[in-house]
Amino acid sequence: SAVISQKPSRDICQRGTSLTIQCQVDSQVTMMFWYRQQPGQSLTLIATANQGSEATYESGFVIDKFPISRPNLTFSTLTVSNMSPEDSSIYLCSVVPQTNYGYTFGSGTRLTVV
Amino acid sequence: ELKVEQNPLFLSMQEGKNYTIYCNYSTTSDRLYWYRQDPGKSLESLFVLLSNGAVKQEGRLMASLDTKARLSTLHITAAVHDLSATYFCAVDFGNEKLTFGTGTRLTIIP
Image (cartoon, rainbow over all chains, first blue to last red; front, side):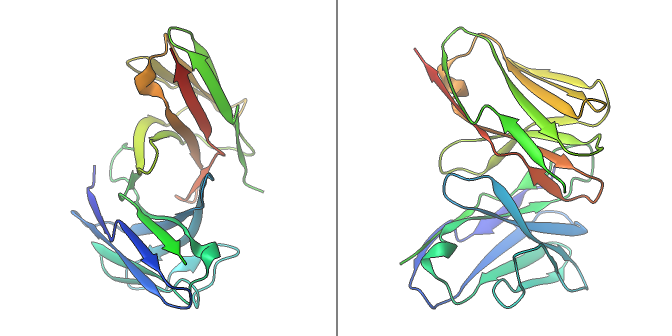
């Protein structure tokens, strides 16, 4: 299965600022997914990122708040913009399995907004 | 609406006991995944269930899928402390996006 390197692993940010999270995959993948996990909650899909096209956002998430880049088949970034304390969560990227493995997840970015 | 429900949400078990976590989903799918998450960590893939009647076992954990009942179970046999974690099921409803269950926070007590 694919190996994902995600960074930063954690950050503490001031409200009103932005943070960009990076995910690097060790193989080419068509689709990458970005999830948010609020404290004590399950995972919620933010958007799907395909190389060469704009990301597709789920209900409740907008591009201005969570811009995504997907410049090639091994890399993607998620930016959390104009942050507020409500954005404090774990953000995870994930890739579609090439074989019958479970979806692979990055190590996560624990974001705290103060 | 695409929904995945898990129960129980919280489970406290004594070591050595058996228990089952249930995952129900709202519409047709034959692709279901189980994950484990330790506190502060990412998700670890446990089982991939890709057809009706699929059964997978690893150590003290066994997962099964009944697509007609839209139900998956994660059975824990003779629980040990190492199994304390949060367990999630997730369903692919045909669009290659995962919809996650609410999670079951499992605590194994001596």
